[in-house]
Image (cartoon, rainbow, N blue to C red; front, side, top):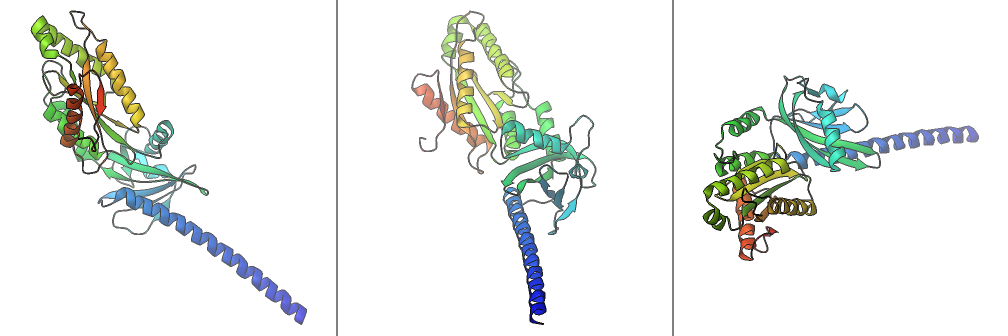
Length: 323
């Protein structure tokens, strides 16, 4: 009887141990999900009307949470939630993979036509972040319907005032469009303003005449269109002052190299009179959620004034501790 009892106790112990191990696995899984949902909370903060999701990298499984619904539900495949609503637009999940692989970043955002959880296709901004762990990688994020915002932004781009000489946006239009871009920045993404002017332009105009000066300004505008992407914002904001806004996963080193390249390009740009010109530049970079377009332009302008004070033909980045 004693031996039999020991055998029963041993089997019971092994069963309890197995259940304990299973409970530990479930607890670990719940802890991972809690971390993921907390990360979503950090990304989302306070929002309404959005779909939160967790995508397990390398699989077709995702969990989503509808607005006002505390429970998560599992559905498969991922594309049934984020599916392109336009044959000319890639699947949202493929765009997310592309952003993560090409930028080398851990987070990003895309704007695309998508059908979100049985809804009609609409224009959405999808913000996401990759989380790596020993148990695998997940992508967490949210999607917001920005159809109205997109319509308004495109209206401003189409109807917004442009400079008659260069065809670039005027300052007021630039300010409005930058606000849209700042609202679209994903975690880790930076917005940058290059604010520059042509050195000694007034003297150049006096010596060679306004037609020569106008020709040179048009050449600068053409250079900007060549050097920057179609989605970047280009503006003439003064007689010889230009501003460019662009965004991306950019290091300070990359930003400074781009600034120096632009300075070199303008330096070698020649007017109809074959005279080499140069420019001075101030740079501002997003760094605070309180920043707006006017503040960024002001910061870049302050950096530009500092450059001009010391002779020009160089760039300087705005520094809160310096100004």
